[in-house]
Length: 187
Image (cartoon, rainbow, N blue to C red; front, top):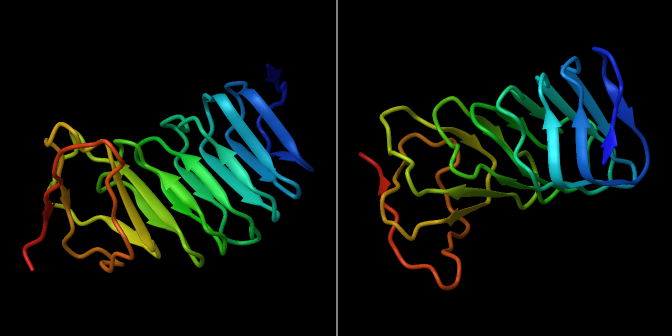
């Protein structure tokens, strides 16, 4: 396990980094990852006080563990040209750049999320069991592929009214799954 002992300032990581466990102390509110050669976290990504995660560079970034709920913003739009694969928590603003990014909202997509995946052939993954259609519009833009996972219990729904990018390049259900997904629209 790799533990950082830093105070309340941006932490910059240079070069290729791969961790099973990535633990930040509760004083770090801003984390900047310069993924010049890549960055990967597989098992634990503990960011107790993190509010903003900024990703720069051109390497591949893969964070397989969901960000803590306090992480309100993920920004990889300005100087990041690599590919992001990221699992996120609830109520986050996510902006990516020109790579073919994959953002996994798990079961956390709601009206409080703002998602702009920028240029590239991007995928938004959504676990829809237990999601409700709701009455509020979703703030989603620049998504080429919506991937709906975990549809087996037939009890999830998504309100598709007024999406910023209502065209679907593809939707798919994982092999071996059963169930249906209501896409609710009043148009």
